[in-house]
Image (cartoon, rainbow, N blue to C red):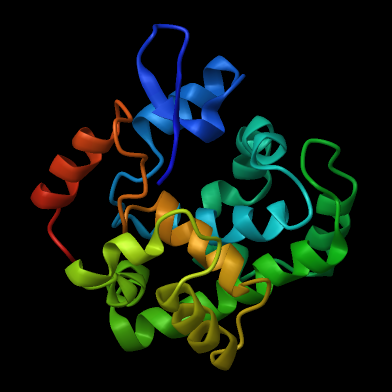
Length: 202
C-alpha cells in the first residue's frame, strides 16, 4: 500500500511529494492523475517522459515551459515538420535537455502521431484504449510497469514510436489519469476519482 506524507498545509499527499517544491506540489495536487483527453497534452507527456529517461521528473518539470516553447507547445503537426536545422537549434537550447536521440525521437513520434490520427481520429481515442478494466486497477498501484503499459509500449513500438518503453508508458498512464494511483488517504485521491467518474472517454 502506498504511503502518504504531510504537505506544508498538513494535509496528506503521496509519499513521492516528500520535500517537494511548491511547483511539484501543485503538479501533484492539480495535474497528476486527473484524466486528460487533450492531444497536445498527451503528446507533451509522451515526449517529456522520454526526456525524463535517466533523469528525475523534477528536472523535467522545472524545464517544462522551456520545452513547450522549444517544441511549439507540443503541437505534433508542427513538430512533425521539424528538420535538421530545428535539431541543431534544439541542441543549442540550454533551457531543455540537449540529447540528440531524445530530440529526434520527439520529431519522429510527432510524425507517427500524424499517422495515428488518420486512423483513430485523435491521440486521446488511441491512448484511452489502454485504460485498465475496473478489476485491474489495484494491480497497477505501487509498481513501475503494468500490463497496460506493456501493451501500450509494444503497440507504440510496432507503430514506429521511440523512447516509449513500458516504464515510461506506465508513468504516462498514471499521470494522464488512465488509473488513479494516488495513495489511499492522499488529499487528491478522492478528487481524481470524482474527475474520472465525470470524464467522458474519447
